[in-house]
Length: 322
Image (cartoon, rainbow, N blue to C red; front, side, top):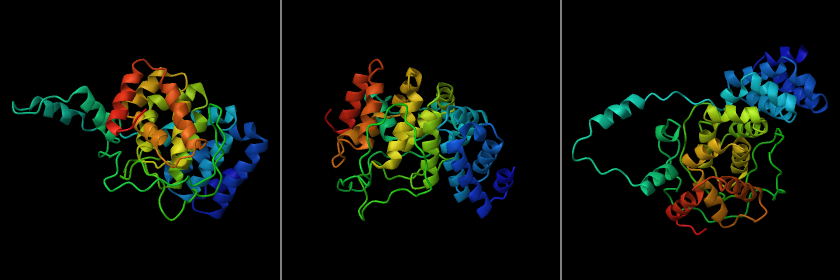
């Protein structure tokens, strides 16, 4: 009860300290924390202000609890997945239908299949891709920076499904020059993952928490049904070849595991573009975790029918060789 009382004081050091205590206790007694009202209080913090330092501490505590199966089930039952990846309602569907009815005779011819795939590949979240926001270019408008070594030491090959423990430290900072970039456009979307703010620590924490939750089969379907697959792919289109991309790929891999429908959604959202760019990007070490996860994702997607054709078309659009 003392911890819950402290969590109810937003913006205080007591609340931050309570989150840290939850992390420590859940390491030794995960079921006790999972079965307590503390989970609901931590999610309330995320609902009220997901950008705050307190929300970051709350997600770090939830990530520790989610390492245990009981913790994952309880966090999901309390509604964590909609908080992390809920997408806004589409309000432009009627306008698109109305516009199609008023097409004049001088309208351009319908795009070819290759042109449609290019539109999905190089466009970020948008109404046609499952996320209502402005178009995002996968290729930077300015000259791409020179490839650099990774900003953190290589990690060992993960064993699926992935799981991470979020610490209180901030994202790793690289050298003075930026690492190889896949996209540079902003993505002003609501919520944590869907809005695609790659520069914010809380977005990375949300992706890491979602990765842990996706280790359970029931949670994978919930993530897919609420639009989490498209949200993760949209975020991947904005990421550099860094820790955020690693977590996005880990979360997407867990969410797609044994689910061909989720894999198909990822392909339709344009996931092959970021995967191929990471695989063909110079300067990424062969044992780097970002490259390992990219290849792991690709191997899962290769189980889909007709994926070879889609892969060849994507490689042609990007100008890379398979």
